[in-house]
Amino acid sequence: MKLKDIVMQYLENIKYSIKKKTYLFYLQVNDIYIVGFNKEISLSNLNEFLVSIKEKFSYSTTKLIKSLVNRSLNFAFEKGLIKEKIVITLYLKNQQIRKVQALEKQEQTKLENFIWKNNKIYYFGILLSLYTGLRLGEVLALKWQNIDIKNKLIYVDKSIGTISQHHKTLTIESSPKTQSSIREIPIPKKLLDLLKVLRKNSKSDYVIVSHNGKQIQPRAYQKSFDNLLKKLHIKHYGFHSLRHTFATRLLENGVDIKTISELLGHSSPTITLNRYCSYKFTK
Image (cartoon, rainbow, N blue to C red):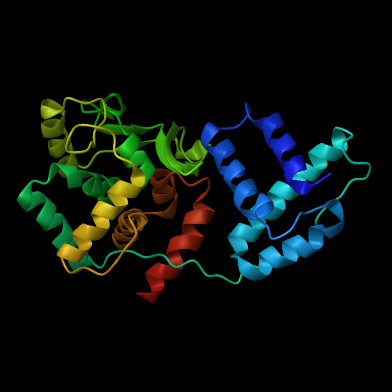
């Protein structure tokens, strides 16, 4: 059997037990890296294929493909599609150091002042992330039913993302990245006053919407964020840097790691510690 066929049968088997977004993502991985490989991949040249992937692509991409291939091969063996159990043992070493990018204090102040001064409602999603640490997908999936003004809480239970399929971009709304990402976040007073005004004037179920009241795609909002930074002569940052900025400011103000971890929706304080403490002490 060809690898692409084994992977497709595996994906069809798990289609209804995983998120739609995840299923479409795996289909995309199969199309790009396996079906799109420069020659047919059979069980006899698996190592050649993965070595080639390792040489061309990042550690995280290679790790993802290796994991998908191994799970597909295990499924094929259990279902009797192949006669022997095959496990890919290609050694991978992560030599990439993930750098946390957070806005400098003066950059953050400049950005905030512009949004507050000009009352740019479209950009209020930036403030939401800066003041709560929400991911972009969580900001754009946030509905008014998730905002508890009385108890000053935001309930995070959804996220939106995009996936390319057949030359089209699909927007998928699903539960957040991990189970721990489903969380409650206290609303700072400055943000609470803003949300009260927005709620009063909103005609949409969503908190942050486009100028015509429709839901915003993450890529479109990231592009708007990029353009705003250019306008303000602030160096380029990904939208995710707002989340890093939120965590960094908490660290600088002495908030403990466990609390920051819970606010960010990390699965354990160790993740938060590894990601942010090295940044704190090198500033």
